[in-house]
Length: 240
Ligand SMILES: Nc1ncnc2c1ncn2[C@@H]1O[C@H](COP(=O)(O)OP(=O)(O)OP(=O)(O)O)[C@@H](O)[C@H]1O
Image (cartoon, rainbow, N blue to C red):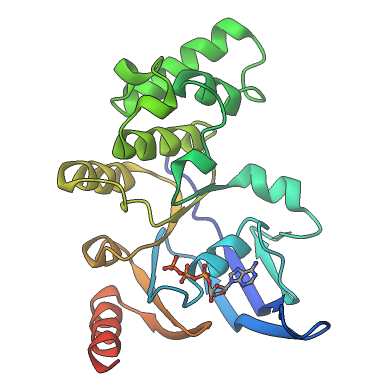
C-alpha cells in the first residue's frame, strides 16, 4: 500500500446547538465555537463524559451539521458535499451494532465494497482479504449477534476500513476490548496509512498520536503534544 496523503480537516467558527426540551424555540450550545485545522496523521481527543467529543467527531463526516460556521475535509464542505465527504471519511461508532447492519461480518464487508467491486466474485475475494487482514476470517460467517463484544468491535472496524477511507474517525474504539485486543487495535492503527482521529478514554491510546485535543464543556481547552494534553486532562479530573 502506498503512502496516502494526510487528510486536511478545517473547522471554522463551528458551533453545534440543540433545542432545549423545556423551552420551545431556545437552544443550548453543546459545542464551540471551534476553530481548528487538523493536518496530522494521528489526532486524539480526550475529555470527560458529555464534554462534546462525539459531537466534535461527528462534525467531521457530516453526521452532525454545524449550526454556525463550517467544516471541510480536503476542501469538501460536510453539509453541501456530504455524500462526497462520507466517501472519504469513515466513522466507527462506539457501539459496533450501529455499524453492523447485515447478519454476518462477511456480508457487511461485502456491502461496504459494493461500489468498489461490482462483480460478486471480486467482491467476495476482496472481502476475504479484508477479513484475513484483521484476523477475522474464522468469524466471517458467524451471526454478528453471536460475536463477543470485542470481536464485534473489530469486525465493525474491518467494515469501515474495507473502503480504504482517507480519514478514519473512531469514537471510543476500545471500550469493549480486553488488553490483548486493545494492543491489536493499537498495532492496527499504527499500520494504517490513513489519517485517524480518535476520541478515547484510554489515555495510553490517546498518547499514540501526534496531537491531542482536550475537550471540556463543549470547548477545546488544550491542543498540543499528547503527553502535555494527557497531563492537563488528568489535572482537570483531579481538580473536579
Ligand atoms: N442531539 C442531541 N440533542 C441534545 N443534546 C445532545 C445531543 N447530542 C449531544 N447532546 C449533549 O451534548 C453533550 C455532549 O455530548 P457528546 O456525546 O458529544 O459527549 P462525549 O464527550 O462524547 O461524551 P461520552 O464520553 O460520554 O461519550 C452532552 O451533554 C449530550 O447530552
